[in-house]
Every structure is written in structure tokens, then in C-alpha cells.
Length: 221
Image (cartoon, rainbow, N blue to C red):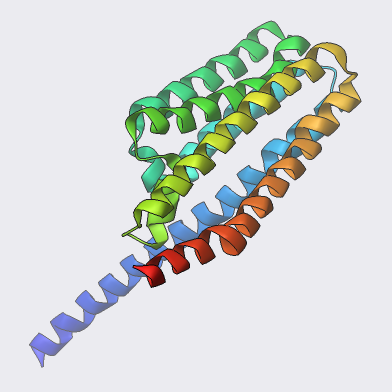
């Protein structure tokens, strides 16, 4: 009986610990979703505020909330690029801090371009060092990728790098020459629609061209 009673509290403690861990994971997941939505929403509404430093404060908070809430296999994969990751975080932290200190609308307008630069650095570094960023994502679902799939993921990573270059340059153009409202609309909504179009196009290409071609190659061999 005493042994049974001693085991019961231990089991309850483990259950409480597991429940607490699950609660923290759920909280982080909720925060992560909200933070991902907060950035484009903030840029979309930024033109309504006449004080850029307030937006800079919120950008800084969003950036570090993303670091805190990042969890799961994708975040773990990205954290392996620690030096590159910290370079990007440092770049964006300095940019948001400069907005706060200077209250500069121009710096605020250029922030989305710096986000694209940061993504270009993160994705481009994997093309140099390998494996490519998209390959890392692909291996989360399938550890063993055939050579054809590895080549495809590298090409997709190159496409994303090209997108970040073009989007970053055009974003800088909107920062310099467009009105506040037009700048917010492009960088807070249209740019994300383009990202969605690119994601859908890659999925269609993968399932209609890449996977059938790989299946035919396997059948022939």
C-alpha cells in the first residue's frame, strides 16, 4: 500500500508536468500564428500613424516574439544556421532600433526591403554551404531524398532567392516614390499575395511535372 501511494503522487506530478509543457507549447503556437499575421497587418496600417518610432517599437517586439515563439521542426532546422540567423536578426534589430531613435519615415519604408535582404541572406547561404533551404524543409517530411529531388529543391531555393531580390528592389522603389497608402498596400498585402502565388505555382509544378518525371525514372530503372 505505501508503495502504491508513493507511485500515485509521482504519476500525478508527471501528468502535471506534461500538461504544463503542452500548455506552453500551445501558447507558443498561438503567439507564433498571431506574430506571423501581425507583421503584414502592421505594415498595412503603418501609413495611418504619423509617428514611425511607434511602428519601429512594434517591429522590434514582433521580431523577438518570433524568436521566442519559434518551435517545431521548421524552427529547429532554421536554428542550425545560427550564425546566419543571428546576422539577419541583428540586421533587422538595428533597423527597427534606428527607426525608434530617429523617428524616420524613410527608414520605416525601407524596412520591408531589409526583410527581403535578410531572407535572401538566409536562403542564399544554404546554396553556398548546402543543403539548400528548401531541401531542409523537404527532409522534415522525408529523410531520404533521391538526387532528382535534391536538384529540384536547390532550383526552388534559387527561385526564392530571385524573388527576394526582385521583391526587395521593388519594395525599395515603393519606399522612395510611392505614397504612404500605396507603399503599405504593396508591402503589407500585395507582396504576400505574390508569395502565395509562388507557393501554389511550385506545388503545381512539383505534382504535375517533377513527381511524375521522378516516377517514370524509377520505373525505367
